[in-house]
Image (cartoon, rainbow, N blue to C red):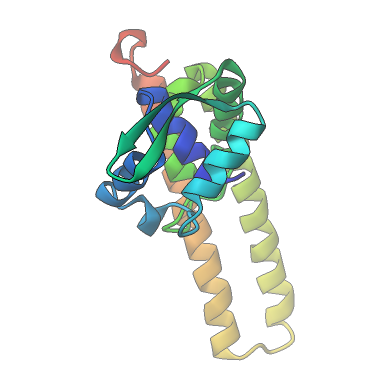
Length: 184
């Protein structure tokens, strides 16, 4: 999943805007500090998405010496956006730059029941991985691993336990919300 494209499409769903506006929104929201966003990738993404028909230039505005294109999202872009949100809901939640956290920003783009199913799949994946790590730790500890390596195992397993609790809480919150509260 390309986080830059998800962010650009997400902002263009709000209203048509030019690249500089999108860049300003990213900075204001500090998205570059928690999203998997490459610096300077906004304009490249805009050009590529325009070629792919995900967005289109709706107008051009002159500001000083610059001619700025005002972009809007297309139906194809909207479909791609929803697919990217779905993908992000399957991403590992343990990084501070989490595609899952980014997808949660626009989770209402996906029907709630589907979002719950995707998060449940994600939960199952994390639980399977944790179980594999627990087994690996048990097997490898019989070889006399160093305390540092054991600590690394314990840390990774601890992070997965936190991810499991996080995903369970997200699923619980989605199940508790009533249909009229804006979550799909």
